[in-house]
Length: 344
Image (cartoon, rainbow, N blue to C red; front, side):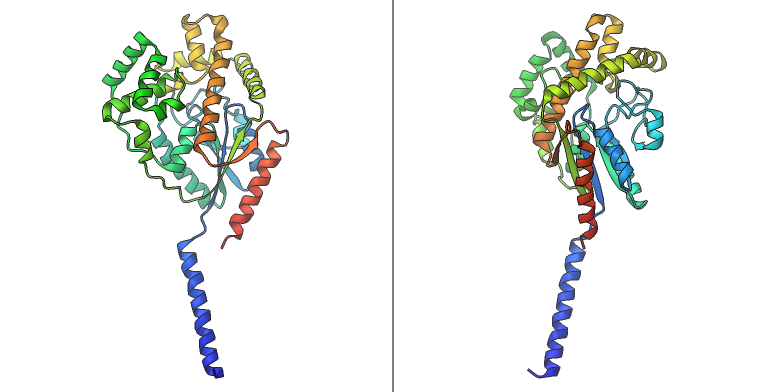
């Protein structure tokens, strides 16, 4: 082959190579990074996220179905005002305790917040323990029917007569997959699962499986803070609930009842700690049992959160009891961000 022919061939190869690279870049654009810090209650999620804010150009977004409510501070372990001034969290204090907040609304709100943070040249860090919200973000939402007040009242009447464990047994016949991940006394979720089965004639798990599983337009790092020893996590939960009682959880519930039109049927008052304090104030449970019932309910919540994390998410697991937790989370984030920036 002559020199001219070689030059033409070489130029063609170069153009071809450039086309291949350009085509790959067009079809594999670099996505902006985002970080998810997930874990059960009392696992140290907030402290780990704030440590990231000290080290990286990030902004924090709360993924907590209780911290969305205004004036619910003590029982939700919401960061205090000084902490929030230093480490602002989006999606905290956004609605009244009289309102409801859905996974669908969370998805709209969180995607808007993430886009805003990314546009400012920072990295969104989503931190919290509401696994349903994380699932909505990662896998989308199923086309589930709207709530039916009459049917819900019918289910509640059945539960009052037979007990929620009996309702759980009914759900297990209709939707064994959903029943397997719900506690026998998780009234809110049992009610919804039964409602969906009766309205649609299909199990909720089947409808959820059909939901669009499109990941959001981000390069995601998911970190799960899981305990190596649940007994130690239980001790933390007991200690934190005692601190909430000392900080005035009972007074907070009394203030909320005076300030707002509330009932135990509202999501805000179904939150762990608030329901038990309400029932103690009304004499539904003995006041001396408030502490033990609150701790037990919180431990059950942590158990459900751990089940979600281990069964429903792919994440980098870090022991939340490790004294070097913040450093290990930061190391994961440092490697992730470096790889994201190096990606063509």
